[in-house]
Length: 138
Image (cartoon, rainbow, N blue to C red):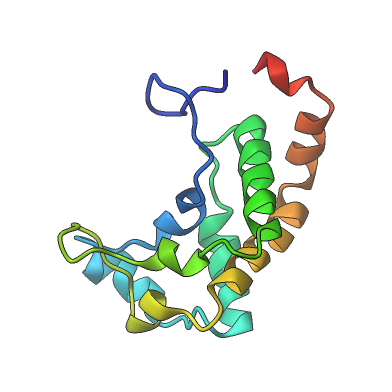
C-alpha cells in the first residue's frame, strides 16, 4: 500500500493535491499577492500556474505522481464529474483562493485537463518509471 508522504496512513490520490497549492488562507500577503497577478481562466496564465505550483510537488515520489495522474485521468473520463466542486469553499472552512475567479472558474474541467496534459510532459520520466513496476507491490 502506498503511504502518505507526511502521515503514517494510506495515500489517497485526491485532486486537491493539484489545486490545494493555490490556497492562500493566512498567506494573503505572501502567496496571495504572488498569485493574484494570474488569471486562472487565461490559458497562458494557467500554464504558468500549473507548471510553477501544481506540478512542483517535489515531496511526492514517482509512485505518488503516477497514482495521482491515474486518478485524474479517471475523473476526466467521467463526463458527470463535478470539477467545480473542487474549487468550492464552505464559509465555515479556514480556506480561501487568491482571487474571485477561483471560486467560479469558467472551465474547471479544462483547468484539470491542462494539469493532466502538462503533468504528462513534466513528469514523463517519473510516470514511465512507475509504469514499469508492479503497482500491486506498493
